[in-house]
Length: 176
Image 1 (tube, one colour):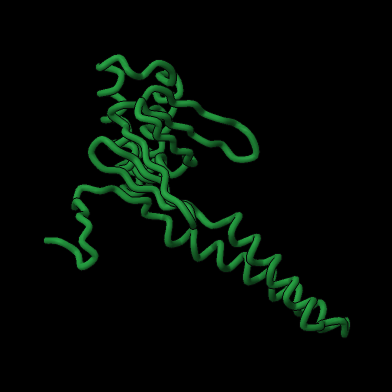
Image 2 (cartoon, one colour; image 1 turned 180 degrees about the vertical axis):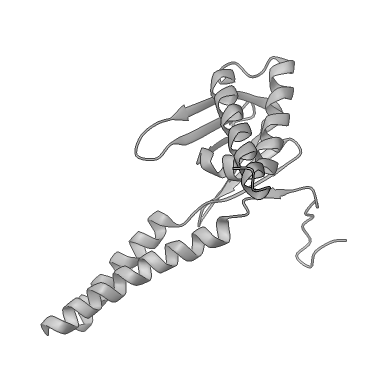
């Protein structure tokens, strides 16, 4: 079956299942900030059209900063779409996987054809199907010898995904 826009989407594509909730949370945070600032200005009698526009712009910046990427994966690929652009990497042609620490942890994937994707590893932990797609492609890359660095980062992430999945199973079965 072909969608109306002419693109083909495989039923096999894994998605971040928590993204709709994260989008709503981002909207709520930005809306709460806007409401608070407008209420504060209105209460002090200093609310003007220009100040309201300034607060709206500030809330919009917060929304843009918090807006989650749309992460999808299929056989041999992983994609992350921000507001303006999608980045895609061939997981079966990975050359490096790096884990960057900082304010928020990021996983940077690079392939041999120039693709680069940067995602929050928490997305993979929360979505075992996404992790499974990435792991299968990374294993092909390692077997082909293209994965030059990142085996340690992937094994650490694999242990974390396994641990979280086991905890979820225990919680669902009331064993924990």
